[in-house]
Length: 146
Image (cartoon, rainbow, N blue to C red):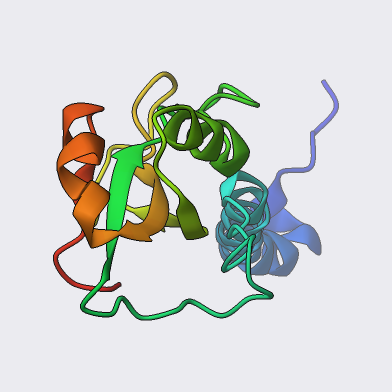
């Protein structure tokens, strides 16, 4: 019978003792880097700050008020949710003038699961005397600016 070389009797003994922890370290680094890489692909782009007045968000005055309603957007459903233009059209059809509009958030935490609500809102600045009409359409008043 021929004698087989074993790792303990050869020059490979040192490389095995270094390679095993090194492979473990490489695996950990790989998974950490991959998690950062994939998390950036899942992150959502922030909407533009405002679509009607050049990026500034006007403060409500005594004669105006911000209202909001969920846009209905869901995770993993590209194109879901209503746009600011669609909401403006609904308000204007009810004879409510839109002074400004912007995307917002309901301020709540939402599980990031497919089909789950994203918590994004459509916010509109309207005249205060039209608030009761907007509330009847399903909008709610924004108590504090975000």
